[in-house]
Length: 125
Image 1: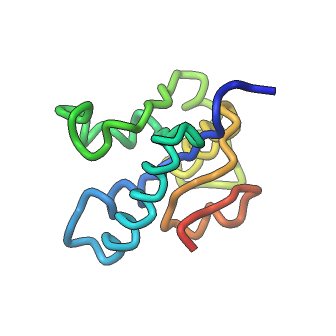
Image 2 (image 1 turned 90 degrees about the vertical axis):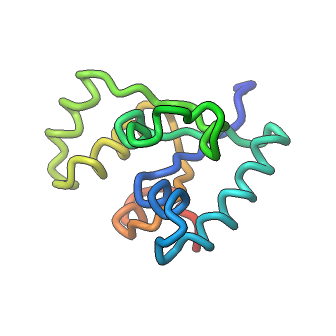
């Protein structure tokens, strides 16, 4: 049994909706994120995101809305696996899936329906 709570990946589409007040699904993302932060504060989950997808918010991220989010650092081997993924031709999606597998992430906050084709618990509904 692991002492670490389960990880929830904040996927790129979710990050974009969460941080852009003009995004069509911003309100849904905020509501879902507040629930996740509550779970994080109770130490029920760890919030994570792929380093490449956090890059736009890197300056000042430690003090902003994404402060609770840990970085899944992408290495050369992860990029190589993602590039070779035949089932998913979109590199960003393939990279997220690769990191989910490597980090044993089962739950994903996403607005990208492609993730629902995989053995992942996707939210919000």
